[in-house]
Each structure stands twice: as structure tokens, then as C-alpha cells.
Image 1: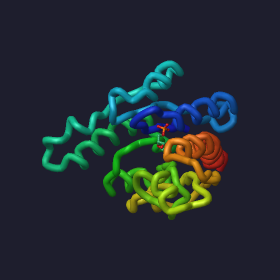
Image 2: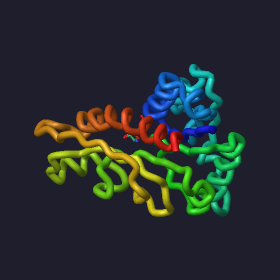
Image 3: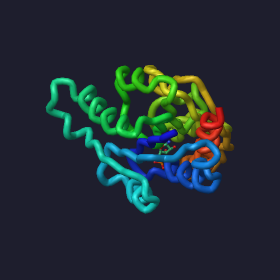
Length: 195
Ligand code: GRF
């Protein structure tokens, strides 16, 4: 069972999944492995980690499709072509900062996951930690969910909750949430593989 992980930056969630797969021997337990890490950004730091762990990497630069009549669809088609080389059992979005077209989502329906840094359905979209602090929330967190055509709104698979402290900044809250993301994402993936 091949897992393909899509990143755009640091890839800390991808790294947590790779480390858990190795530590828990998913290859033996589930006949599963992370077979590729794909990014839309050539400078994504996570690509270095993937290479260091002998995982195939690829970059599909969304800017390369800007001049196409339908740039989003063209990018997604190129991304799907790369992903499908691995015939993925699961496609895992991990800090992947692109909104995917309905065609892409439909193609991977039922095997497409995302992690969002808020307690959905609260705070879909961007700048979730600033918004939680601004709203005076006492708690914040992260959500692992199946991806559907509606942004940040698919069926919830897992959540983690953290306190919002009086002196929190978006950065201090983000760090506290990220620590939890690194626990719930690998666990949610393992639970799906165990099914
Ligand atoms: C983080 O804000 C995380 O909450 C969200 O994407 C951002 C980067 O994550 N999922 P990663 O370190 O690239 O996994």
C-alpha cells in the first residue's frame, strides 16, 4: 500500500509520518510505505528530509502552468500524473498550500486526507491561530479530515486540543498545535491502514 505525501514547506507532518512508519514497521504491519513526497515548491525543506530517508521526491511547480488557459486544472493534471505513478492507497496532504480542483478531489475520493490547524468546523482557511486568539478562544487545536470538494470541510477523522494561554502569540500557539499534529496525523493514517 503506497502512501504519497504532498507538501509545500517544512514538511514536519510528513516527517512525523515517515518516522512513525519506520518506528512502527508499517511495511511489515500493513504492507504500507511512504513511496513518494511531492511538493509544489522546489525549495520545500521537507524534500531534503525525504531524500535523506531514500523516499522518491518530485516537484510540480504550480507557477509553470500560469500561462495555461486553465492553470489550476493543468497543474492538478500534472500533479495527478506524478502521484499516479505510485498507484497510491492514500494521498496525504501535509502542509500542502494549494486549493485542489474538484476533479483532483474526485479522482482521489475516499483516499485523500488533510490536516488543518484548527478545531474544524471552526476557523477553516488561513491564519487560524491569529483568528483563535483574536476570538478569545480558550482552546485551539488541529483536525485530520477526509478531503472533499468543499475546502476544510470533509469528514473528521481525528482532533487534538490545546489550551490558548493568555500571553500566546500566533507563533507560540502554532508551535503547541504542531506538536499535537505530529501525534494525531500518523495515528490517523495508521488507523486507516489497519482497516
Ligand atoms: C502548519 O501550520 C500545520 O499546522 C499545517 O501546515 C503548516 C506546515 O506544516 N498543517 P508542515 O510542517 O509543513 O507539516
